[in-house]
Image (cartoon, rainbow, N blue to C red):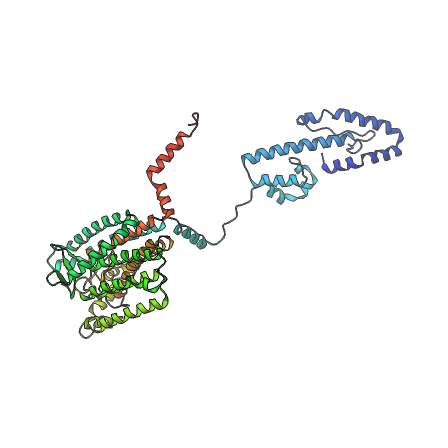
Length: 558
């Protein structure tokens, strides 16, 4: 029934009927009777709405239906409208409970605009909306595309992954293990010719390095499970032991000199120990504990408490190392000292003063040694020199240049055949570039960069001052030593004679380095968010949680 015909009949049915009666007085009685008859017969129609459409009444004397001539049709229209509204509300509720979609929302909007659900397609207003509006109402709208480009979404995904609680823990563990394993492979490749030169088995140096890596793995696991209070308890004994061993090195008949540096102790058989490597770890733990205790007492605002006794003890270690002639280890120890002072918030003037004193002392040591001056002059050299003083630096560049993009192949390098000295220790990065190419060297750099970033993150997110100083000191140690070694191989820094951490041959350097990595892992695990994430991932907790959930289920549920 058209809605346009129903509304006028409700408002003007009385006046229109009077006008017709005035024009045709002979039909008034018939129309009145017809109206009464229609009203009486229309009463049961709404209850039988599902039986079919209602036939329109016929006006006497005409052959066409008249919807406005009787007041009973207005009541019928109102009843039909109410039932249609009720039916539409029920259908909308059922459809929304089953499949919520924008189409249901469109029906609700039409309902609020005064349209009849279910009869909207028959009305003139609905037909005037056009096919585009009807398709928008019935069909769900397409999902909106995510904002930003693909690179932006990738950046957001990577950023969210880096912000997870266990990111630093896994990055430290994974990068350190990858560096160690790749170092074992390269030690075996770079040391074969050197071992055969000394009439030793080809795997001689590799087996010693593998044994040191196995012991270092045990130290790493032990340190990663130790609480911070136990790390602090080890600080003073480790410092006293390192100083005692470094003093023994200087005693004639006990200390051993290797290639001009007297900084080794023989511990039986082919094994030797370099105490200065353990002095780095001792300075970090002892300095972190000292600064943390002073920070708790609010004493770091005074420069004398910041410098004493940290700087005098560090200078004592530097003096013992320089007595043996090891300039490279002295540089790394100085970098650790500056890292601790920077983390403690040393003023710029104080920091610059200590740096100036260290630079002056270092310059004097270099100036008084012809060997160190020759190394300083070989920075950026591209020829061997008159007496071959730049032989090692130039052949390191040759090894890197001949590697190309992907190298000559593992074990196929040529510089290790007697051309490049210390190919498996100080210049193992050059052999890596020759055999694995630019891809291999960039991979090593990426692993060290990830390790450094994770260490900085651990130091920056903790609230424990000891953890902050210790993590910052370890990160400074690893990254400074890697930069000095790689810079010397690239010809950007003088050759300092320090190994590449976790990568070069040398058990004395590998053991304290892996213990320091264990410290970083322990500090990363002590973060509250990381503790919660690790507790959830433990199998025991997961099993107990499932058992508790099973007990709470109703008896009839499976």
